[in-house]
Image (cartoon, rainbow, N blue to C red; front, top):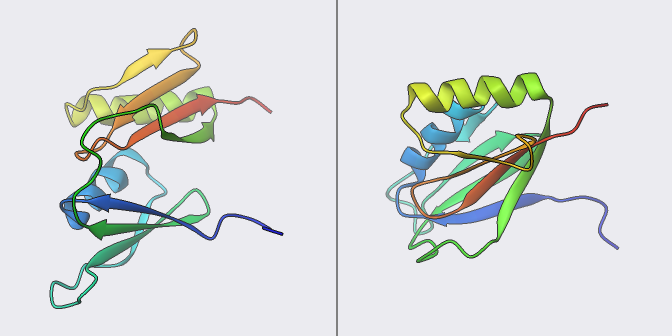
Length: 118
């Protein structure tokens, strides 16, 4: 039986660009391995929220379809991320009485910041 998530793999056109987007939005995101263009399977490995994200070079989804990755955050963390998105001129939407913030990367992957208070 599964114990926990091992990693999340996302297909993206430009792994390094997507990795920098995520490190700009999330102050705790860290690039663990840079993309090696000579690799037959070019990818960037990013640590975020206790998980590894494999950003693999390829063609991502053609459109958004409702699939998304949701992170539990405090209201303060959500607002801090929103400020960073404003500085990056990155579009986002608030929903559910401002308890959810949605944004997408360059390849139509949607991320949610859901306020969960302890």
